Length: 384
Ligand SMILES: Nc1ncnc2c1ncn2[C@@H]1O[C@H](COP(=O)(O)OP(=O)(O)OP(=O)(O)O)[C@@H](O)[C@H]1O
Ligand SMILES: [Mg+2]
Image (cartoon, rainbow, N blue to C red; front, side, top):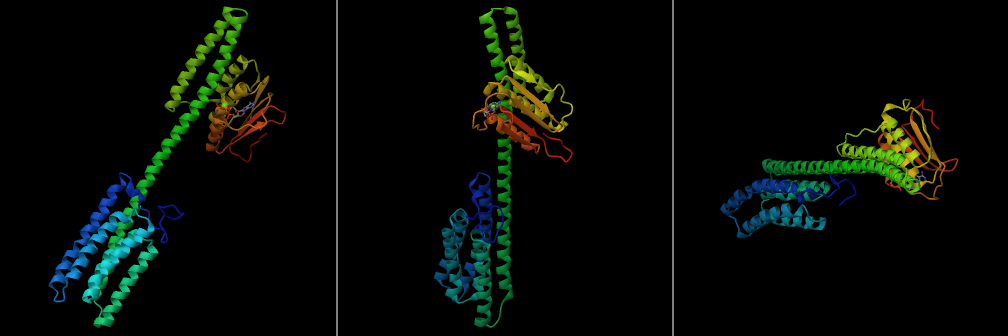
């Protein structure tokens, strides 16, 4: 129905009542139709009036009954119907609503068109329904003045007043319905974000731990196969035990969002992992200079990048350099000509974006793979 946000008000837009299709919204639909149904009870009084009238005709009474039914049907079904059907609902309501006035030759009965205009307010773009309203008021005033010589302003005021009241009910339920729908959407987005967070954290935690453990297991196997030397193999197994215990508690903490990654511990983990894989490690000894708010995210950068060095490169050495708001991981391995980012690098980019930082990755200036993460740009920052 329009390219704008359907919840945004616009006089040109076909009102979007689609939220009435949800379980919650359905109640709003019942309330609106009930309020209108109640207002339509006034037509009974009008029917009695017509029956008492000396000119009263069965035809006018029949039109009045169909008018009430047309309004209720239009309210219930029209709100979820496409534009053409909406126009048809309003047109039918107008035809039956205007019939008593035309049949009995009395402009006073045009006041009853208030319900048809209200139906228009609900189903049509405001510019159409408002024009219809003005047209009916103008017709009633003109007919009274030209046909009967005087305008009964009370009737005109009733027409305008009741229409405005019904229109306000529609506007309120429209706004409330869209607010409810927006709130539901916000809830869904929060759940999605949380799922993404858990997926990202689990990937980072398990990807690293399992990679390190695989390398260490391979090392242990080779020790046992080649020399059958029990002591170094046992030392490796003990470290493996510790790693697996650490991974388990990391997974638990990740799921409950209590996991705090620190750059210092990730550098220590990187040293163990690189040594086990026989990769020469050139790592900073301290991470104290790094801006505190970047410590955690840089920890993730080191963890994933070092895991990638173990998994994807045949590097003989790996170097990590740190600045106050940047960290760079380079290796001397071979790089495939085109590397598409997987979960790891994409997750890192998301983590950095969350702190207004950036991530670059690809072949480094001296060959090998290079990952460069920067925190938000500050005037005094000195960066590579
Ligand atoms: N140190 C590296 N040396 C060579 N290629 C690398 C290196 N680091 C990353 N790559 C390339 O970049 C790609 C994307 O890495 P990324 O970490 O995003 O995904 P992945 O490691 O393949 O999978 P995962 O989602 O498990 O992390 C890798 O598949 C690999 O081709
Ligand atoms: Mg990876």
